[in-house]
Length: 193
View 1 (cartoon, rainbow, N blue to C red):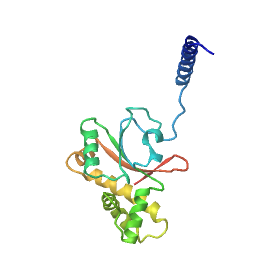
View 2 (view 1 turned 180 degrees about the vertical axis):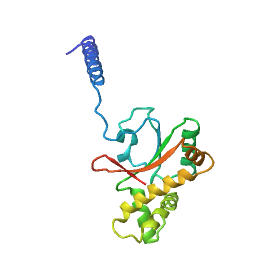
View 3 (view 1 turned 90 degrees about the vertical axis):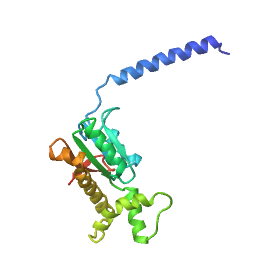
View 4 (view 1 turned 45 degrees about the horizontal axis):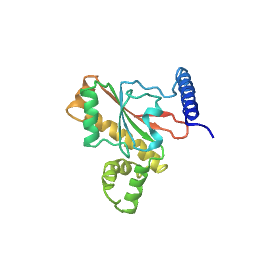
């Protein structure tokens, strides 16, 4: 039966070996990201865990200012957060980032189609996303994909025109607001506008 001393010695040796292995791993140069985004960006993204902006753009802690809400829409809290990013942190770029297969947009489509209110506080999500769904409802084709795209376009326009801070920064060419859609299949972001 091993003694306590042998156990502690073996555990500390294993710890040193793991630390060295971790150190060796950290010294390797990371692969270049397929999606390149300046660390001076703020992102309004969906809360869906499949679209974590930090991973999508191969960013480290502190590189991106990220606000997430199901359906990636700009409500009062998101606008205030983006104003903070622009006015206090001097962020020159905001990306509204939607993604394929967005559950919040899909739930909004179903709620409007079935004329059935979602439970709890979820009607506020439907209220925010409904304009995009209604705008594309007569287009035909992929209603979900069209609504996701329109929702991004609508929220880019909303952030650009929000007074007083964001619209002034856009007018003074201190801020650019763009939209993108993350493709779940290949992890790439296509810009929309």
